[in-house]
Image (cartoon, rainbow, N blue to C red; front, side, top):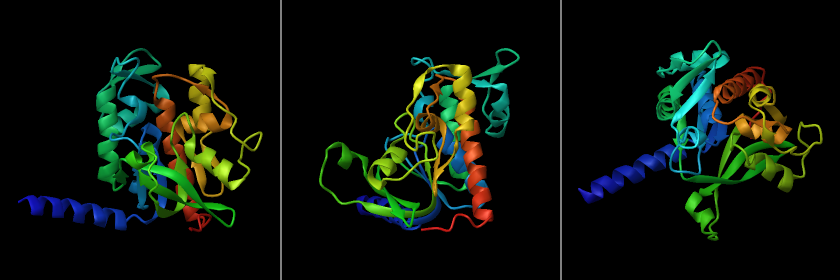
Length: 262
């Protein structure tokens, strides 16, 4: 039995990894914007994988606000609650409440069920830059990186990369630092996240979700960090709308033949 169990796991993971070495979109970060983006891309028939450095997906949703496991969704994003079959309560004319655990787990379930592949414990340590286009990511085990072990990585080639790494905007920062590239921002670099301003932060999260360099998109708090906008706390409508916007931008780009691959 022991050999059967181990063989099944090794074969299953090997097949999954081998099948995702070349994909349409690699999403780095399994928070709300990344999962929503993966769901809509997979629904459109694209080959999409999400790479998360932690054991669990869902980003900052799980903890709610200061470990009160409740979150708020504004009316502009209300339709996602119905589409993902998330129970909710109306708070007033503009806002709805939802259980943070149910929201996170539902986003995970529906993205996988739509056809996205999710990899946890994977750290994206670098990007592939070819002919002035980001065309892939460089991956390693998160525990290897945490212990600073000298272990060479593997590479994933992808037509598009989505930086959904949250506040650090890690993928964008790495591409900027190592590639010497110019981003689609006012300064050409990373503007940096501003303090709390929930209303404006929610609006600009969606506005700043865009392609910042050929093949590289930003969503969620990574979009705010790159373009210099405000944080907003435990309200998640902007995150969901951001991931949805990026999915549609990528779908349109592929249809128009602009995503020419690695």
